[in-house]
Structure formats: structure tokens, C-alpha cells
Image 1 (cartoon, rainbow, N blue to C red):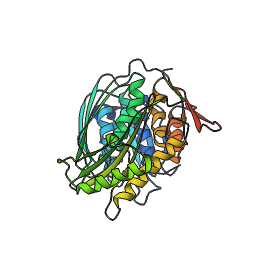
Image 2: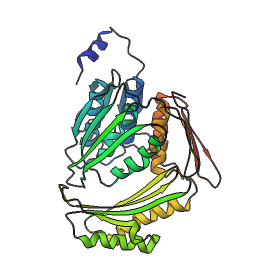
Image 3: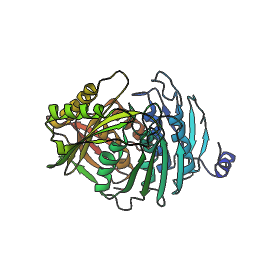
Image 4: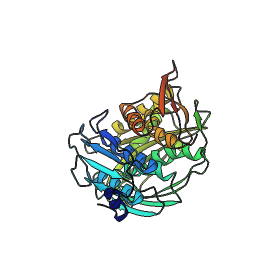
Length: 360
């Protein structure tokens, strides 16, 4: 779809910036390349062409979740776009800025609302005014960060450094029904402060929340009993949420570990044929792994902090490890902002990530 203003660029009335070309087969070969490319293109104004989109997945090309992210980014950027169709393996995206506004999108499946948000939020932090987003889809689905991670881990770090991000879960949506709804308000990050996150600080709170929708209560009770067994968390640190307005059945166990300077969120999802105890065991293993490390930033947060820092004031943080997702993200950022992210192994303390921000 071509925005009327953007169409004039093809007529040569305005010089087109250099196009960033990305190969979707690189690194982890999934949707991360596309999402980061959209955010960076919106923020920098540079057009991008992505080829072989999600070539590393069993079902390559744009799924509804990715197409929703493209169309939301296009609306925010008044962009000229080609290739925005289900199953498309190539996309050209040329924004005309990053403009504040109000937007409502629906994935139409249980595709992740968090992943759709990640395609635009880093850029909206530097838009020309406040923006309100309503995104409908899956809020708690496998292979994607749940709402709690986006709000309490990722956004918490940015809020601590001057960002204004307000996230509200109106209705949970589980796989496969979806139908969840998230509202987000983001204001321009007027004076971003460089991040320095080398330690966790003292622990301030731990909480286990077993979320069940349209399922027997004993599922949540068994999960929380297992948390008590593994982690020794008291009854006051464990609770059940049983939303009655979820469109379909679902279960997630969310473990939140709050410290002075960072919050880690570990989650595991229930599924047909998977016992409640197995769900709890998976979440507890993730929590125990993070607690055993010394670096403050977990592997998922390490991936998601790079982009907003590169667009802002930069900073340094220590991560427990860098996943293939993280290294792929570094490649995409480097294509737009060469040399912005560097890493160094710190013996006994994980990996130190240094980001040179555009506004530093």
C-alpha cells in the first residue's frame, strides 16, 4: 500500500535515503529481523528491504502477527510499503517519519501482542508526541514474551531511566484462542539517561502468579505448590489469577524477581497433555538459573534492551548470556547504526554489552 506522499518519492521529487538491505536467513532466521528492521527504519527514516523473511522457520514468510506489525508500523510512519501480504517473503518499507497518534490493531489469531509492540515501541519513544496503542491478539503464548515481561522487565528498565511507558492488560489472550487486549501509552523520551546496569542491587520482592482461564483451580494450586517446593516461596509470595473474561482457556505461571535495578520475569505455559508440575518445573528452572548467575540482565532482556538504547542515550549492561536472537539483533542494528553495539566477555560475570546511542 502506498501512502500518497510517499508515492511522490518514486517520481524523484525527493531524494531517497540509502536503502538498508537485510537477509532474513541470517542469524536465527525468524521474525526478530523484521521487527527490529521496522523499528529502526521508523526511527532513522531509512528505507529497508528484507528478503527471505523468516526463512529459518517451518512456515516462512509473513504470518498474521508479522503482517499486523508491518501495517501498524506503516500507519505510524505513513510509509510506502510493498510485499505486505500473508506469506510474503520480501518486504520494502519506506517511512515518512515517526508520527504520534492513536492506533488500534488486531492480529486476528493468538499471535503475540508483545512482539507486535516491539516492532514500533522503540521508535515511538522518539516520536513527535504521545501515542496510544491498542493491540489485540495473544498476550500469553509460547515462544513470545508475555505481557508481564514487556511491562515489568523491559519497560521497567526504561522507565527507571526517564522513559514514559504505561502498559495495561485489559484482557488476557491464550493460545490458540487469542483475543487478548493490551493498551499502551508512550510519550517522547525527552531526556534519556545513559544506562549503567552492572549489578542487580538488593532483592525487593518475589512473586509467583498462576494464571488460569476456564480451567480447574487445582491446576494453579499444583503449580504454586511446586514453586514452594523448589524455591521455598511463602504463601504470601504466591497467588492465583483467574480472569473470567478471557476468550479461551489457558494457563501461565509467571515468576517475578524484583531487585533494586532490574526485574527478571520467568514464565512457563500450560498446554494440553502437560502436567501442572511440569509447567512449574520449567519456570522454576529458569528462575534458579538467573538467581545462580551474577549478571543482572537475563538472556531475553539482553536482546530487547539493545534497540532502544541504540536509538537513545546508549549505556552498558551485563547479561547472563547472549542468545542467537541477541546476536541477530546486533547485526540488524549494525546495518542501520554501524558499530553501535559491542560486547565483551567478563569472566565470572557474563557478557558486558556496550551500546553507543544516537543521542549520547
